Image (cartoon, rainbow, N blue to C red; front, side, top):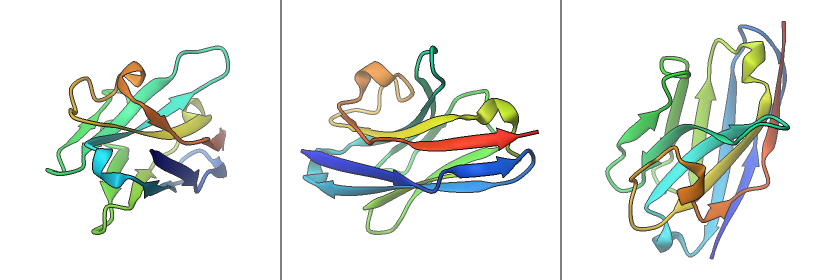
Length: 125
């Protein structure tokens, strides 16, 4: 099993920045790919970024390219999401997730097995 705990969310004004963190514990060997997702009530969960844990290859949704950066620490126990130039439409609950074996379909929520509890990001105009 893998345990994921997100932090770093909050309320910010448009144009500001946030860095979300996801602390990973448990059987880390089962992690091959990790991603950040966001969800607004009543809408589907949207994948915004993902990273291949081993190679460091990153993937981004077109809607966030240039503003979001996914990264991991050297120990590969913490996942980050740097969000710059925040917009009101970025308001959502943000989740980190992990899956084994493959980074295929990196931003498809249905392919991930492990999820954190989420951290809320609220952007005011």
